[in-house]
Image (cartoon, rainbow, N blue to C red; front, side):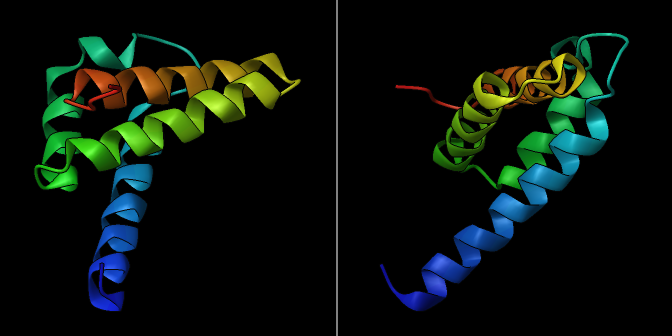
Length: 90
């Protein structure tokens, strides 16, 4: 993988992270039930299910390590949204 490809992937991951964080409130409706949120996240991922899965995995790790319940719940919601938007966890 070239430096240019790695840079592009990091930009897409940053976009995924921003959209997912904005679309997952600390409380309220589960984001995976929000079709607009899933569509926006899928657009941000640009067809890269692997990057959605990578971000979901990072969020699952953050949730497991977080001692504050509200932050752990937010990271779990973000992971769920990434998977619902097409993240391939295999």
